[in-house]
Length: 574
Image 1 (tube, rainbow, N blue to C red):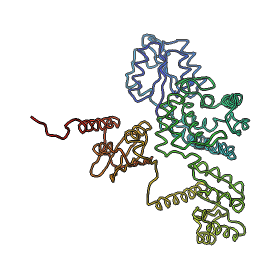
Image 2 (image 1 turned 120 degrees about the vertical axis):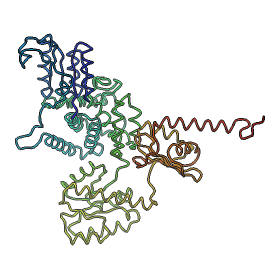
Image 3 (image 1 turned 180 degrees about the horizontal axis):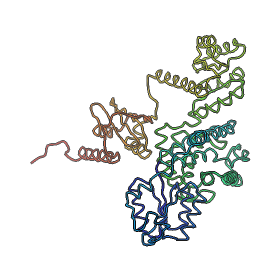
Image 4 (image 1 turned 30 degrees about the horizontal axis):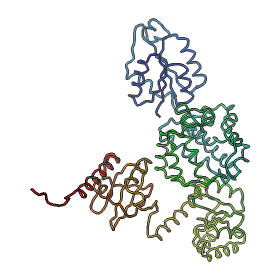
């Protein structure tokens, strides 16, 4: 695990020298010139080791060391002292009489050494496993609290997953990743008692907006008495600060905002934009990502946004409420149905619970779901009769249908499957396995639709006349997108592949690489399709994409000038 160091030294040359030494060894180093700088950095930055370069016996340094160890017991404090200040002091020279100096390599090795071995609890369970269990427990408890809220259900789980992935992509220390994950789950604990505000349609009044903003302070007060080994209260308090300093509650700006809060600000806004609210409809995933890019450097830390977008591209963006698979669950076992709903929603699905399908047939006809899960009634014939009614309706005939049975029954399963049901799911099996089976049903249906469409892949389509290739290239470059762009123009077709915003492969006819890229730049009419998240194993383009685009446009301009210049194409007279 990469260590993060804070170096305190009054003299600039000493700070700089130690910083260069640590960074040359691949370590992270923050420089401080005063004790107040140290204390501020410890509150806002991931620091696990403080190096104090001072004179032997400096009382101010001793007081600072004592305060650090009291307020941050997991932080190491190392003192470096000039040789001429410790000659003859037995308290510092413990290796005999004389002068012993430590070389740079030895000092670097000493500083980079881990503080101690991985600790085990008496029962042999590692602390890492204990932390994972703690996060899982908090995740379940928060999920149950959100379960009945159609606007916030599973939002904390989704936010925690993305925040954790972003922190891991930033190579942050494991304890800071845990800190961010837990803070994300309980970030809105201060909203207790504000349900009336969030339930109202329309915008908030000034008084309501003031009450709403106070939830970060209320959340901090609710948990400030808990002796966390992490800085969770600070993340909760500051996750609505803005990078430009116009946020709340304290108007912190830029790096003054704790890193965990800067990450959470991006994640929280993204998850909120993907969900419906009483005062506004949700955005699509692409619209939400565009909004984050637009606000980078203003509302959000631009570096965090860049890394966040990279994570979303690599993992596949979570879908907004209008894009998620819609599932109807009909089961009278409220306990089982509630747990299943929470798990399916955590997996990115929209779930509607109904008492029985017969009473909701009209709503199914008005808005067909992507999957129906229904328990087998005690009178099995009733369930089969309703299944036949659904299969006989033109609107619902092709909606996937799965029966939920109390436990595996071979005879019942054979009968169910023979009736054209997509799956027979046992409620007694592991919930992870049950959710995976539901996911497989949806995946099979998606492939079935793709095959029915002639294998056509889905993507953003448009006319080259309205959005030309140079504009598409710039959009994908700025958004760090991974995508395949397909072009069709006057019986010509071509593709350009992007990875993280960089063009890596182009192909049209017999042309490949830069030549194919330049050829397609000249296409001024036709259609384009942008399919996000697709990658290629071929790499025919090297170098900076924007330089490639500029070279291509220059070639086009030169060709245009030659074609329109007087006497173009005529022989030159003597």
